[in-house]
Image 1 (cartoon, rainbow, N blue to C red):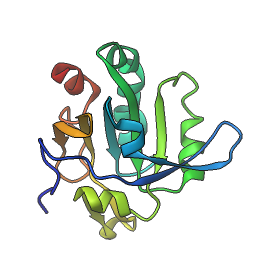
Image 2: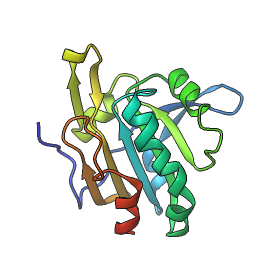
Image 3: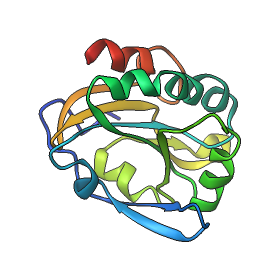
Length: 164
């Protein structure tokens, strides 16, 4: 399925969930956090999966300060998991200081982006395709979208840095 989100589009608003430092469930509006700012939203098909945990997320953690030094206010990680799973996964990266781990438990926001991945055959249901978006004042500047759930350099932190 072809993605529906593209460069030049306004990123859709949506509420994503997370657990705060006191493990209280919170929601975050992408429009409220990204209005007037640069933000990176990247997604992985699933928390704790090998490609996501060993390749994709560590690259963003390692490059987060460099990305932020280029004027990015927020680096957001999205996965179709619940907020409790995302918090548990976040805790496996004690070196993370800049990335917010956000849950799209029902895949509603992923569907609004048109970036869902059918992982039914793998027993995982609907997931997010692997991608990295750069938005400036809610306008998509870069849309690096992987085919399926593959891990290639397309959606990497290095590619976002090149675009900045």
